[in-house]
Amino acid sequence: RSPEQEASCSPCRDVEAVEGVKRVTLRLEPDDDEDVRPAVPNELPSGAEKGNAAAIAAVLAKLDDADRVVRQAAIDELPRVAEKGDVQVLAELFWQLEHSAAYVRQAAVTALGQMAERGDAEVIGSLCKKLEDPEYSVRKAVRSALAELREGSGGMVAAVASSSAPARHTA
Image (tube, rainbow, N blue to C red; front, side, top):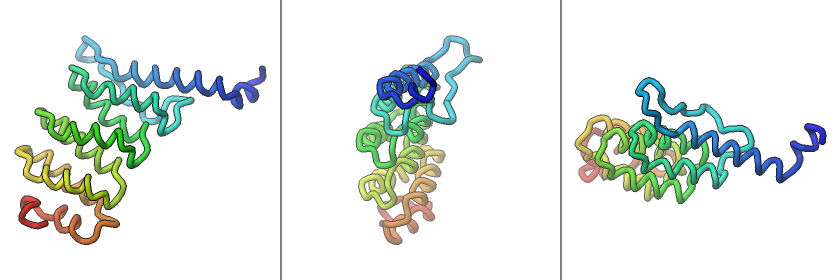
């Protein structure tokens, strides 16, 4: 077969997508050597399109990894593999907002700002609650995420995002 024929072959594309998911998963695997850490790819592997269910599942599976770096890489990878507004991804990110580690909460907030549709009331409400997080880095990330979501939601998000006061006093 010619390269053109293989490129147009649906089963060939499926095999390429599966291989791409395997590469994403391997990049998210922990390494015992502190100097060797998972690489976060800057783009999707060849064959894996944004919204590919297998790629999303592989990344979501890494959110519960024992290695902090792997969890962080997985959260950072979600906006690259999933479509904006993906319900399954948003649900996982909501869950991560309650994580005991501030860096996970911060990464989840940032990812929510990137993954949610502008004006998404559920996401905005959850983020507003995190304005009372004990960690400054999380609160700062919330203000940035709310600023990203402000369009299409009226003035409430703009007022909350620019305020350093707790959300319950401004909303």
